Amino acid sequence: MDAFWFGIALIAYGISALSYTMLSLFDRQALGKLAVGITIAGVICHAIGLIIRTIDAGHAPFTNLYESLVFASWSMVIFYLLIEYRYKARVIGGFITLMAFLTIGYASLLPSRVKQVSPLVPALQSHWLEFHVVACFLAYAAFAVAFGCGIVYLCKSSSLGKKDENQANTLDMMDKLSCKTIRVGILLLTIGIITGAVWANYSWGTYWSWDPKETWALVTWIIYIIYLHARITPAWQGKIAAWLAVIGFVAVIFTYLGVNLLMKGLHSYT
Image (tube, rainbow, N blue to C red; front, side, top):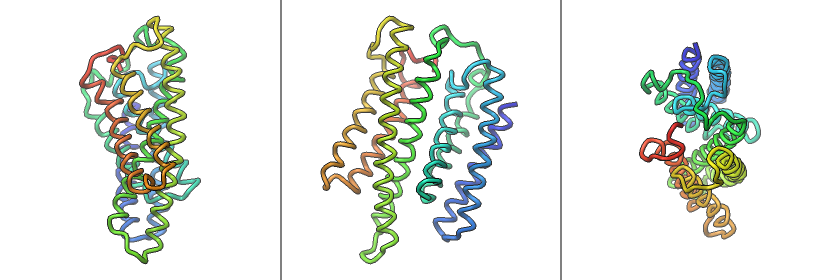
C-alpha cells in the first residue's frame, strides 16, 4: 500500500519539476503557484506512504536502501519547502523536485527483495537509530538545497549581462542561501556524526572504527568546513563557493550511496 502513495509522490514531483522549469522559461506567477501546490500535494502523499510503511514495519522507515532513498527524497522536498516559504527561492525548486523524482524513481527500480519490510538487524535495534539517521538525512537535504543554489549560480553567472540587475540579485541570493543552508547542514551532520559515534560504542564497543561510511562522512564534513572557512575570504565567495557546494554534494552522494554499493563495512546492511 505504501508503494501506491510513493508512486503518486513520484508523479507529483515529476510534474512539479516540469512546472518549475516552465516557470524559469516563461516567468508566469501562476506556474509558480502550481508548482508549489503540486509539490505540497506530493509531500503529503509521500508522508502518508512513510506512515503506512512505519506501521507495517513496526519501526522507522529508513532501515534499508529502499526505505532510506524514499525518506531522503522526502527530506529534500520538506527542506526545500521550508526554504521556499522563508525566502521565496522558487528558482531552485526544479532541481530539488527533479532530484526527489529521480531518487524515488531509482528506489522503485530496486529488486522486490530490497523493498520488502524486514525485521531490524540487532545493530539497528536502538533508539539512537532515529536520532542519528534523521540528523544525517536532514543534513543531506540541506546540502541538496545548497547544491541547487550552486548549480543555479554557475548557470546564471555564465550568462550574466553587465546591466542585468535581476540576475545579479538572483546570484546574490543563491550565494547567501547556499551559505545559510550549508551552515544548517554542517550543524546537523555534526549531530549525526556524534550520535553515530555514541551508537557505535553502544553496539560495537568503539566510538570510531574508520569504517568506510564513517570515513567518508568525515571527508564530507571537512569539505563543508572548508567551504565555510573559504567564504571568509572575499575572493572565494561567489563562483568558487558555488563549485565547493557542488563538490560537497558529490561527496554526500558517495557517502550515502557510493560507499554502500562499492564498499563493504559495518554499515553494509543499509
